[in-house]
Image 1: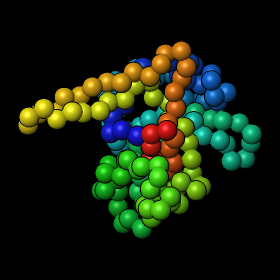
Image 2: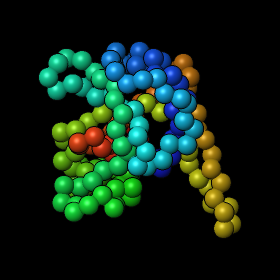
Image 3: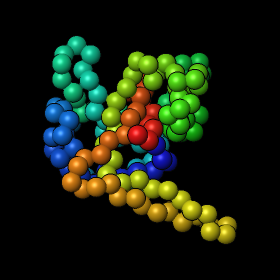
Image 4: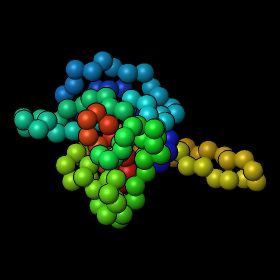
Length: 143
């Protein structure tokens, strides 16, 4: 996944295509979601055959880390490399989720400045990115 994304759709619109349930309150649109912030994810309930929408912190703390200071840097994994990198492999095997963005940002360097460009995802369907994490944390990746 990218370093920033947006979620401007209401909770009910995000839940419907996935058949998920939630006790979370509706949220206000967010146009600049950054690492370490709470984000909605959809994940399978481990005990019941139902998908749940819940809020988790966007970060990944490897199992060997002594603290969470490097969690904001662990937000992006290439799909072809995630299974081989120790920081991501355990979470990738056991803790998957869906992240429902409706746009994402990429930056282009222009001289010494960076210009952000927002890529909007088709409004007819609700997009999803894959994510994985543990203990209320998530790591996101592009589909």
